[in-house]
Image (cartoon, rainbow over all chains, first blue to last red; front, top):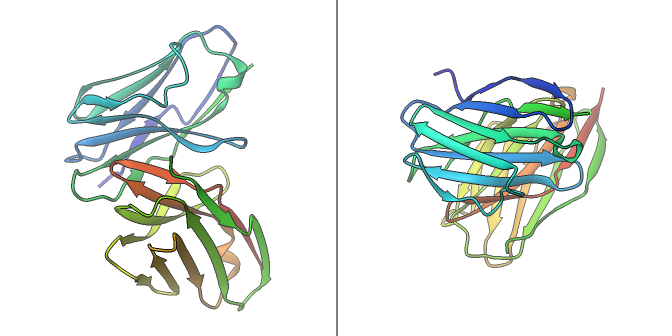
Length: 113
Length: 110
């Protein structure tokens, strides 16, 4: 199994630009999570999907952030417009409902200048 | 809201010494607790998962204990090696939510 796949691994963009992060969960997993990791706040849950439906988006910082899961094998996290304070590592994780264990992708390191 | 604390924040030991990493949490109504390892610039690797009904879990040189009533978990790493140098994160699950501690950064000196 290839594990959770994220792209790009690194993204550098200028303030005001749109950024799209991508995630492919492990095949057969029906739960998907987006996290953000910063030095100041550690790892925080942004949004949780179950069976492609957003269940909890209370961690999404503001309206500039949006996430979609059009099918069981793909999800995107979009920031528009991006700001320097969005610089962080964004992780995607997936799990099989009832299995409990979450498997993390390698992360996307985002730098907004 | 679940609060997870890890002590110490950093630890440096000589090779061969046993490591003891501590994790505490405020809400004992957990489903499970997971220990992760994170290498610099890398993702998270799951080390051990302890279900709420379990007291401990072992994998090779790693042993994790859980005392749900007191809100504590301890990760023991026996006979540490330089390759064990990394940040270790504790995460507690309530329903679907994982709440993470800030981590303990471990350095094992050769």
